[in-house]
Amino acid sequence: LASEVRVVNGVQFLAVEMPGINPKTLRSTVDKLKEQLGSAVILLATVNEGKVALACGVTDDLTSRFKAGDIIRQTAVLLGGKGGGRPDFAQGGGTEVEKLPEALDLIFSDIATKDIGR
Image 1 (cartoon, rainbow, N blue to C red):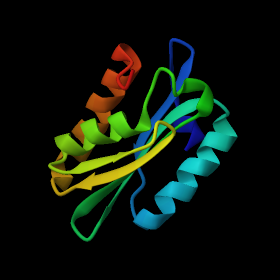
Image 2 (image 1 turned 180 degrees about the horizontal axis):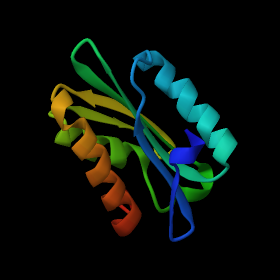
Image 3 (image 1 turned 135 degrees about the vertical axis):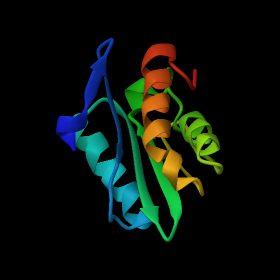
């Protein structure tokens, strides 16, 4: 997954779908990626039983600029769902699976260019 990281204004961003992964595994994967990348905003998604599960992690050094809860809420709304959490970790989901690729692209653009969650 590290090869999918995009760097914008010196900040590492990762927003990807992980097909076939158990939704409960998203959290541990976010934690491992935060440790591996050191400083990053990470948004992972998977589809399970016709629903999208989302997990977002923001490393401590970036939580003043990016809030995981806000990122999850905005992404989940695009997918017809809801979510929330803390500044450093949040979870959510939605039912509009077909919108997932577009939602990941849109939220990445918003995160990278507008510093959503500030």
